[in-house]
Length: 238
Image (cartoon, rainbow, N blue to C red; front, side, top):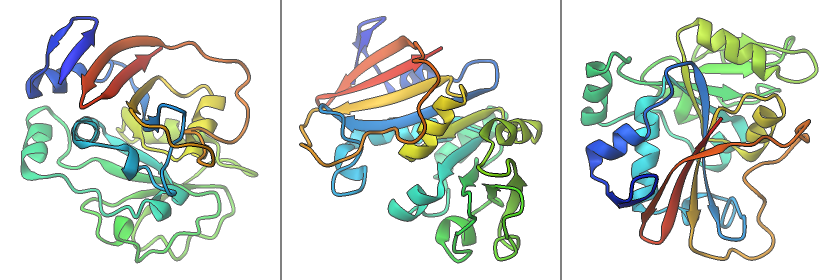
């Protein structure tokens, strides 16, 4: 892997981990992969757009977060398993003052999740489900804590405030597109880590963002650009 910007040169594992250090203040970081022509999936899933180096960064981002935020549709569509890390990454977290595992947080306005789904039932630490006020969560309470925020739709700002109050300062969102769009519309995205894959997916696939329009376009600054196996790995921040 090579760094193209701001300091050109080869990147080893330790440097790569440092390059993805979160900001000192609490933040919401979003991670996505896309094709050259803007597709967020191939055949309905993101795996076909990824590659070994993208997956390496994917693992580093999970290693560095306090909580992993994901939409219920993505949990189902991408076949999420329990959020487990290998021994090396768990040891790194403990050595750097983090809990052994990050907490999985699933956003679902209708709380229509299967409590037997592996991401919930096999989780090494108790997950959190974020939903609306008044939604029936009786079936989920044996396997997850519940945060209620908002009446007609999930109030993400309130939910993230609750997560931070519970000690989850660094939040990583892996999607899906509607959650990313909602975070953007609410002005909650502090960073975007985007891998651009060198392929043309063609028409049909959706973008990495969807849902309500953001009030105004938001400018982000390029923090670094990496190149590996033809993929560009970009980090943008406020």
